[in-house]
Image 1 (cartoon, rainbow, N blue to C red):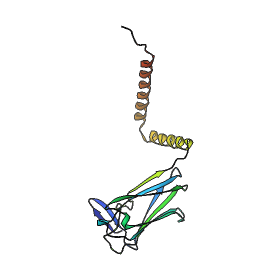
Image 2: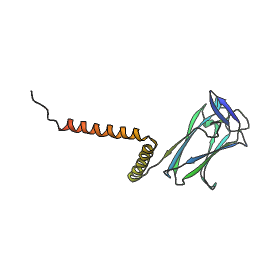
Image 3: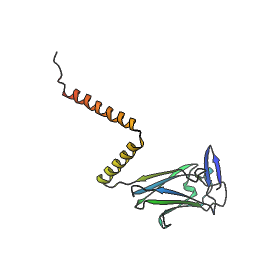
Image 4: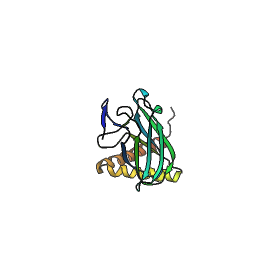
Amino acid sequence: MGLNIEGGKPILSLQSGRYYTQVINNPTKSLNSISLQLKNPLIKDNSLIYIEIMDELGEIQKDFSIYGANIGDPSWIKLDFSPIEKTNLVLRVSGESQFDNSLYLFGSENGSFDLKTTYALSNFQSRLKQNIYSQVNLFMRRSLWHNILYLVSLIMLNMYLAKLLNETPSKT
């Protein structure tokens, strides 16, 4: 796999002929940016790096090319694009570097790499649906006792606040 360790963090060489893939789940069907952590030691390699976002069938949805001179030592590279509406995506990263130790992608032994994703939620209804979905998932992951304590705390806090609001200030 071409794995090296840089400061305790695994790095994957972007030498020519190597490529790395990672599956991205797109639950909102609105992925609109990704950020990858790349490294160009001493910013000396100007080779191209290719980043492709494909659907499950391998059809390219978005593709990018970045010159090594645009990568720091290390830096997060953010790629913005119009939202992709496919549910499951594959991210493929490859490079044209002729050297094994000049351009890197931060990753891990299991093949996943440092990745940040953002999603566009275009209207209030979409944001509301996503928020409800997230809250229900969070609620379902907690234990029953945790949920009961949470609800009791909310009810007691609301009762206390209602009491405070209904009290009339006394004149002295």
